Image (cartoon, rainbow, N blue to C red; front, side, top):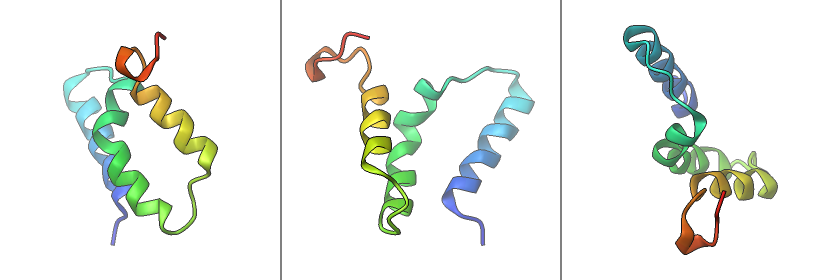
Length: 69
């Protein structure tokens, strides 16, 4: 059985090949980070620094969170 992470990777690659649209990590993370985090966190595979950086990237330019860049 495929993991959620590999399903996401397959989805992204198929979408990119079919549409020729370039997506950035900044566009992908808000939609898929929570599922990825839930799947791998209970196994202890996500370090606190990775979580902190991913959430900072997701909230980038969100003035309510105090991020300017």
